[in-house]
Length: 165
Image (cartoon, rainbow, N blue to C red):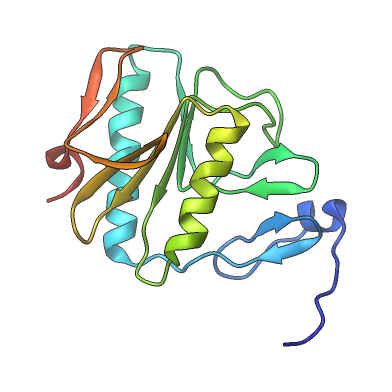
């Protein structure tokens, strides 16, 4: 394995990457899994659900948005939902929800680690969606499969029927 070149945060923030955006972890550029059509459709269905909810609430849903968990750590949730419009180009306060959608080449350990980082940052709702097995997971005290994902703050529930065709 070759030596890694450290990149400054400033360099990372002004770089556009070909293909899928990269995350930033203490000077290292971290490649993300390449999504496929199943992943993309699930992400669009999540977006549609939250855009519809936005019509009656103050939430601000977004996809593929860089967020700063701490100095030197920038992650990119597949979907995140803020309680209000972020005031910074690089949000550094936890969203209400951070969602990861599995891709075929995701590594289980890396995804679990990322979910735990969102929880440690203070994200109240950390979710994992498996569009291939059509399963939903919540990350609270570990990762647990659930029949639906709920937002008691708004009295709404997201079911597999809302996401998968």
